[in-house]
Length: 112
Length: 109
Image 1 (cartoon, one colour):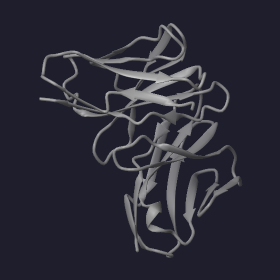
Image 2 (spheres, one colour):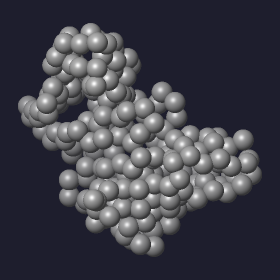
Image 3 (cartoon, chains in turn yellow, green):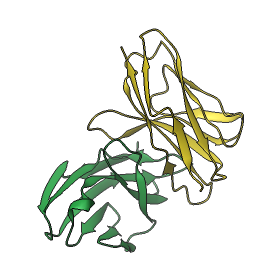
Image 4 (cartoon, helix red, strand yellow):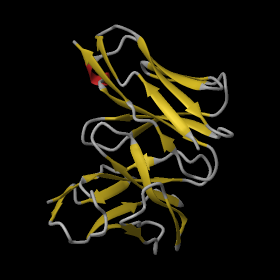
């Protein structure tokens, strides 16, 4: 079955540590996205990539980094510079024609 | 700057009580308005894309409509399983979407 996978579902880290969230898709989509969702709020765009080896900052990129070495994969690193990293992180992908984004199940990150 | 405002923030209905959710938008050159459903603790599920004023799309008890300034998600005779947060998003250029904060719908049996 085609889809988007994110792992792990829950992640716990100590303050000051970097952590990498995984996102893989087998939909053959060109574009991939990372969003952050806080309780009771909508989705805020962190980074997005329209093609391999290229990516752009979204609205809240500070404290995050990404890479896009393969079409199928778009990992997100939450660095120690991110002041409030505890959140629900969502990965999505889309084609470059209709731009309908399909989402993974999310990773809930808790930093203490 | 693209803006999306959804109302109400929360809506509680009795089973079978039809209603509508609103999505107002401000965007330079709309290239798509998207509706998603999100269950607690899960990723959003794509529902509809609308491209031009007057367009309508339906799926089971849901019907989405679009004008030049807003979109409505009409829910006819809702059931408890329709309870979820409904998100609206717009695309102006490129591939990025701008999301509203959502409407949390609760349907009581």
